Amino acid sequence: QVQLVESGGGLVQPGGSLRLSCVVSGIIFKIYDMGWYRQAPGKQRESVATIKIGGSTNYADSVKGRFTISTDSVKNTVDLQMNNLKPEDTAVYYCNLERRLLTDPPSGYWGQGTQVTVSS
Image 1 (tube, helix red, strand yellow):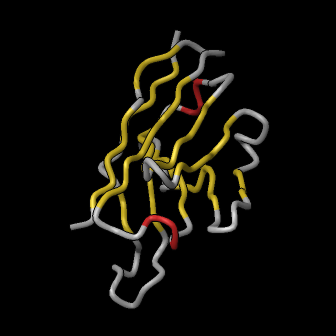
Image 2 (cartoon, one colour):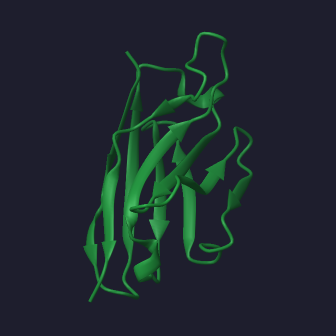
Image 3 (cartoon, helix red, strand yellow):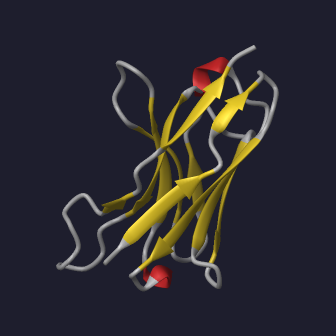
């Protein structure tokens, strides 16, 4: 059974930092492209950062220079370091593994989400 479990969310003041972590189990971690997405109230889910199997990364313009995505193939985790947080970063953050095999769900695999609130 594939499981993605996020942690690290919380309440932080503007300018602060948080590190989100997603532990992946039940799957061959190394063959998947991965990413972090977020969904704010009343808005569509959007891509925040992605990392390919080869290590190349891509970031939403709104987080470039502030967020860093990384993986640990020993621990089977995909992390998101978030610095200089802004109120507009407030959202539920989701970990994702993109579909690779025909047996994977069409939308890939998703975690349950972790709430990040940036407020003074």
